[in-house]
Amino acid sequence: MSARIDTQAGLDSKIKGICDVLRRSNCAGALQYVPELSWLLFLRFLDEREQREATDAEVLGIPFLASLESPWRWRDWASPTGAKRLELQKGRQGDVFRFVEDELLPHLHGLGGGAEDAHPRRTLISQIVSGVQGTRVDTEKNFLDVLDRVDEIRLEAMDDQHLFPLSAAYEGLLLDMGLRNNDGGQFFTPREAVRAMVRVVAPEVGETVFDPCCGTGGFLAQSREFMAQRLGDAATGPLRERLARDTFWGWEKDNIVYPIALANLVLHGIDQPRIVHGNTLTGTREHDGLLGSAPATFDVILTNPPFGGREGADAQTRFDFKTSATQVLFLQDVIDKLADGGRAGFVVDEGLLFRTTERAFVQTKRKLLDECDLYCVVSLAPGVFTTAGSGVKTNLLFFRKGARTQRTWYYELLPPSGRDRFTKTAPLTLDDFREFFQLLPDRADSEHSWTVNREEFERNNFDLKAVNPYRREAGDQRSASAVLDEIEVHRRELAAALSDLRTALED
Image (cartoon, rainbow, N blue to C red; front, top):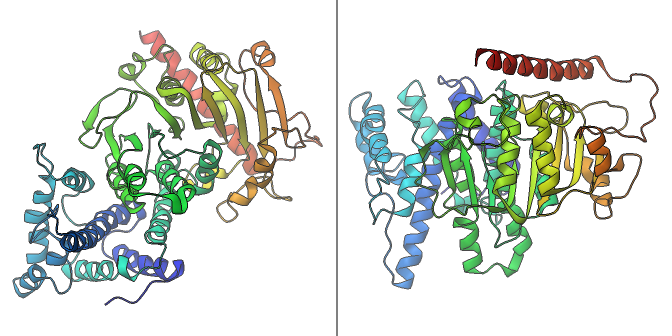
């Protein structure tokens, strides 16, 4: 019996120990050991959950259909006392790896083939291991060590918060992956920014929540936690079932990140993540077996499109205002997929707001203000996305579908006094949003907040950049790194403009 895990630090220590073994076993970086740990953790908790469900079904006298049978269950091949594992360990050197690579993984890949009577979890299993052809661990000794350590993390040994400590620990791993990825902002939005955005948009039980480029699933996972906490003791079985199965939808095109998103959402209590493996902008799908009956529009959309991404003609032809700029196409997509009365939170880099020389940028911002009420823009200080591998200055847009924008309330979120930016060692925290949440209900003016009328946007050709009229300027107070960040933003914009010009000339 595993010792009870009653603190977050205790669980973090367990996870760190597993990662230490993986790091010395041919998984040097987070981009290698996070995918490896993801599928192992998923199979571990799937097995324990189904054992509980089988016991409950037996007590109630109802049939139970497991998603996996012997010898494919964790308890058979991975647990230290499993019959299949003991058999393999008594065999020849390499038998464990041969079983995993030649029998287990091919069996899991083949699940969820579309049969009408297929177990609802089998497709999910096949997708979570879809990119796994074999273990990355270098020796069987190290691999068995990893299995033993994963086996020690049991739901029955956790505190009463159930999966929350595990999901928090897993988020730490995803942050590590972002820190080690030069384009980390594409996959990982800083969690405090996610929590603040979810709190502003405030999804309610019964609404549908969508992320068209969900990365590791942070917005969907946090929305689920927010909604479950709001329910509290009023959560009935049907409501919990709806949260677990028919509330959250998303798309993700990256082959490595897609299965990690599925595992992350399952660990956050979303039993059937409705995630498409494909490109939202082109409509191409690698796999949509988990999609279910997705609505055409959604009540809530929360997303952080890739910074600086470029799209080809196959994506551009689907939109009214054509451009290769990924974020501009995603903004059009979100507006179109938002239901009447629906709410959205959207992360953009500074360039999208201030660019007024390209038709697609201007027309997309006009579309936003014509079809939605852009009621709030939060201008984040430089460095917020540094912890996720990206130093681009960003803004948070909040809007509702169905009414034209007449005025927009801006808030400039600055680091604590004495600093000009957020850093990896002093990152953004939820406490940094305290004044913002105090002012938001009335959208009051302050030293850090102001309102801009639509007429001013139109006079400035839909330049939506946040320029605080109350800021006292005493010369350029920016640090060298902040100046370099702004230069980098302008460099990206220039490169994008040159790329579009070359494409136009070639056509």
